[in-house]
Length: 203
Image (cartoon, rainbow, N blue to C red):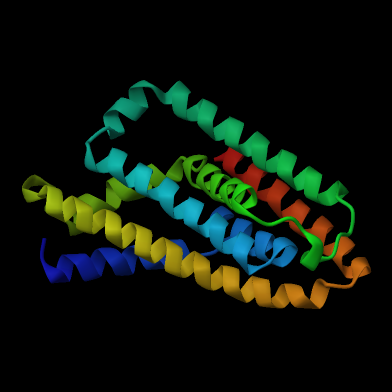
């Protein structure tokens, strides 16, 4: 794979990832409600989920996904229902100051799982990669090393972009530390999460 192809693929992916959508709104709403660390963990989960989608596309399983469309439909609707449930939980949660919220590996893995759900629940993700790759990459001569480079590009672009959104929203969250503001931020973020779930279910 040539350097030109790598740059072109990275640029196209960056435009797609940076464009406002369910994943970006999920990261921002998490950052505003839970802080930068939680948002970055969600972004990491999105990157890992996107790597799985790219791997499926690279292995030429797009036709197989069409055959077993019901499996991906189940994942989509289950993921959407999960996100809506999280949004409702955030809406109803008590206005707990951010400094008092639980942290640790369990919370981090929960946020990573949330991000992976967002990525895997978006059926347009695999279609995007499957349609973009033939335009920019020579799939006929793609080696294992090239595939590793592609996955590295996907992971880097996703984590850097979502990490940027996570840091910005996390910094903005400091304004919401008073309990009255926390209550409203939980409701705004919860509504956004419900919206993300609804968008994923409607696609």
